[in-house]
Length: 100
Image (cartoon, rainbow, N blue to C red; front, side, top):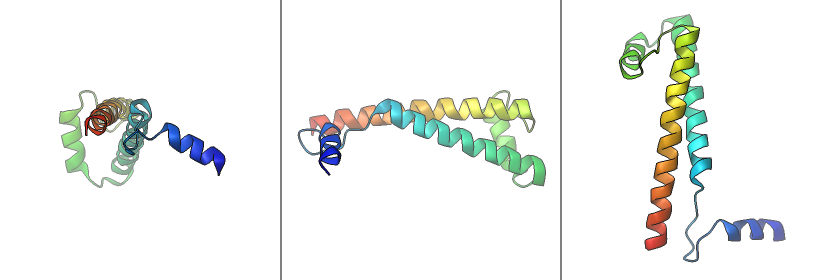
């Protein structure tokens, strides 16, 4: 219990707000987004389900197609977007929590 409280003390600000590590949040969202589009690509390729949405992905992510190489491109795109989004949003949260 003592180790848990020590860990908790380092991840909470003086005002009692949780501190979110931008790198950890970015990696979490990036990995989740990459896995999500990989699963969706496999689902579309093997079942044909969701082809209309996949066409939107092709327009949104240059290089994305229903092939192995295109799926890898989609994973890279989604990881990049997730990483940047998670990092920026957690950084903004930490700044706002510190100033409140």
